[in-house]
Image 1 (spheres, one colour):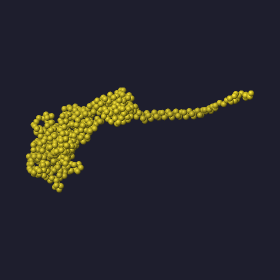
Image 2: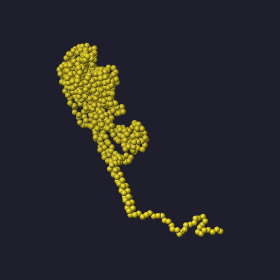
Image 3: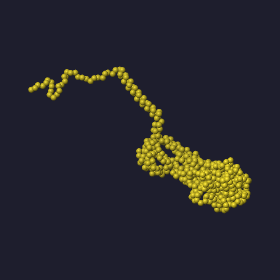
Image 4: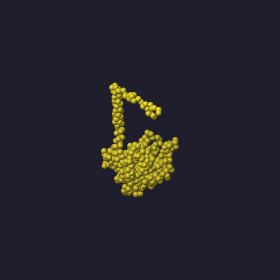
Length: 588
């Protein structure tokens, strides 16, 4: 048999020599003291740098961004709620509300809390009458706060609260309502979303009506639920303003004017009803008007209070100024006879002549009374020449034209009176008959109040009481002697007689004194007088004991006649009849 090698086994490799020494892994060289110190220094530097970075970041957050971060945290935990003061009411002379606050709500959102903007928008949009897509954009903005809607009525607010939508909050507020609607909307005025009066009496007495707002500071949880009221300052309501307006008369005058505009296809019609002794305004309206409760249909032109904020050429209603001046200065008397030709030259080179409205009237002798009764243009210019240019303008100023009436409403115009030194050769023929100067209806009404009030011209008055304080009457100015006023009254009664130009203004059972007016309007494109007119009538009743002055101005009547006697006088009669019955003024 073959022999096996010593110490070996089949299938295994020969084992190593057991006597050979084993090899151990090499150990790292020992760290020297110098290396140890170096590593400690590096570690220390790293620790210092790390701590420094932490301190720097903390300082940056605490000092640089501290205010912003604090505000964000505070905004999530603390909410300040403005508490608007209830606005005072505007009342008529008998305490009927012309404008008042009613409970409403403001809808706010915290978009960062709303997880489903589309779904929330679909629920809110029908209630708020808003576009769902636009509302969803607002609710999905992710901002801290967003305004969703103002002046939401209480019924709608309750329905929104019942939805219990996360991120939607309702704040109790108040909204303005105007019970008369379009009647007197221009005079009462509007209140803006910021709670400030924008026009009319709302603006004039805004500081009294507005009151003092309050505030509430609340601590809230992440769902914006109130946990605790931290501060609560109650608002102080504004005071009420009592006007001289009679609401029932105001509404009726508005209706009459609307009918006048429709009948004569006019641009507008405006009326003022005033007490001549005190200047108190019983009604002041313009048609067409606007709905103050529907801002989507707001029209700035319809919102203009044309009684004070519109100037126009008055036409023949202005003739009383020249005739009053001539009688007061004793240039003429009502019975003075004057030769009045059929026409007079204004400019021979341009072949311009002045006629009366009835061009076929023959040359004749007329008394001053008849000149006014028949509204003779030629006769009035003859009287004006006795006064002279300076005298005519002196009397225009004495009647208050060209100056504020003292009513105080925003936007009130002063009119435009041509100074004497700028008169042309034609001015003595135009201005005395109401062409060439611009006046407001309030100025014209006040001038006739001076005649009705025995020569004393009152300051117009719309408000009698503010809160608990009476508003004193404005000053009245003596314009003429009572005898002159009495003479003018007699002459103006003739205008409303059967043969006068204002016969359509007569009121059964009452004596009426007044004057018609018809004035050409200048075409803004050409600067020349065109085929548009302003028709007017101003008068007072009862003539022998005047209680009311009423003026009606109809702008650009286009259907049928455009004369003041045909267009404005009938409206005067209807308004006068209603006012006399309403205010229980007995017949003559």
